[in-house]
Length: 94
Image (cartoon, rainbow, N blue to C red):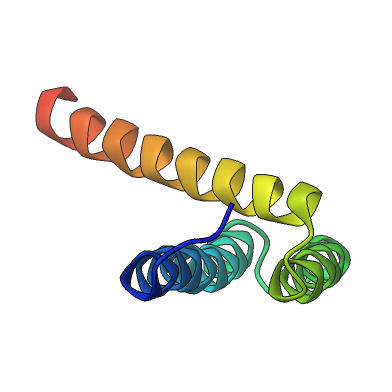
């Protein structure tokens, strides 16, 4: 099925938005790993694995592979859920 030009732009904008938030989730994850572990061996190991995973998924998402786009969307959804849970915990926590 063919899309009109404005529909193609909209889909491209949404995909680029997901990829931008995906990169932000990588940076947030590295920050959280750093605050948990410092510059120890665990941070280096988990940080390296996380960065490699994000780079591979980002590369294939740029190539429009369905499985990579699915992983990007799941990651962004999990990030949103984590942020909402953190905000609720801050509001209602003691």
